[in-house]
Image (cartoon, rainbow, N blue to C red; front, side, top):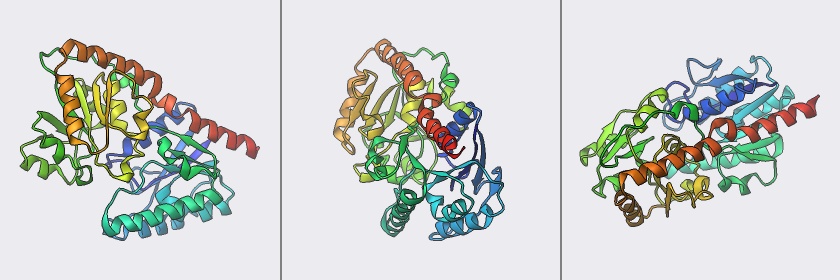
Length: 342
C-alpha cells in the first residue's frame, strides 16, 4: 500500500473544515495506506508557515512548502490541495513523485481577496492539468473543470459507526444548524424567519446572530457531534444564491443524516441526486420563502413521522456517505498510479 504525503493549508487542530480531511485520511489508513501531513499545524509531520496577515497567506505558504519539501522523506504519492499546488509541483516533478490535486474548498471570499483567490485557483487547475495524475473533487459541479485529466468524486462523508446513538424522546421537533457560522453564509436570514433554531459552531457571524436574539453554542470537538445532533430532529443548511455554493457537497448533510435527522437544504450538486429521498427537502439556493415553507411543512408532521423519516436517513448515510464508501474511487486512483509505476 502507499506512503502518501498530504499537503494542506488547513490547521489540523483548529480549522472546522479539518473534519473532511481527517475523515478521508482515516478511511485511507483503514485500507493500510500511511499518510504524513505537511500543514501549518503543530501536530503535522512537516510544519509549514502560513501567515495570518491579510494578503500574505498564500505567498508565505507557497514559499514555506518549497523550502520544506526539499528535505521531506520521499512518499510514493502526494495529495496536494489546490492552495498548495503552486508551492509543491516543481519539487514533486523533480523527485518523480506522482500527485493528485485535492479540491475541497473553492474560493468563497468576496471583493479583492476573492478575486486574488480565484486567480490562484485557476492557476492551480492549469498546473494540475499538465502535471498531476488526476484530481479529487467534492461534487459533480467540478466535472467540467477536470475534463482534461482523470478525476474522482469524494463527497463529504461521516464515520457512521460513531452516530449509532439512541435518540431521546420529545414531544416537538428541535431545529439545528451545525457548522461554520461565517458572514458569507448569511445565516441572519434564518434568524429573520422567526424560527427557534439552535446554532452550533464558530465564525465571524456569531456576534451578529446573538445580537438578533439567536441561540448560538460554541463549536464542539468532533467526538461530541453525534451526541449533540441526537438531541435534534431537523437539520438546516440554507446557503446564499452565489456561484461558489452551487458545487457544494455539504458534510453537514451527511452528519445530519447519519444522526437520524430530517434535512432541509439548499439545492446544491453534492446532494441534488438524492432529491427523491423522503427525509431530504431541497430548496433553491437563497430562496428564503421556500426554505421557510419547507420547514413549516415538516413541523406540521407528527414527531413520530419525523423520526421515521430520520431513520431512513440513517440507512441512506450508511449506504452512501460512510467514509469507506466516499474514498473508494480515490483509493482506486491511488492504486492504479502505483501499479503503473511498478
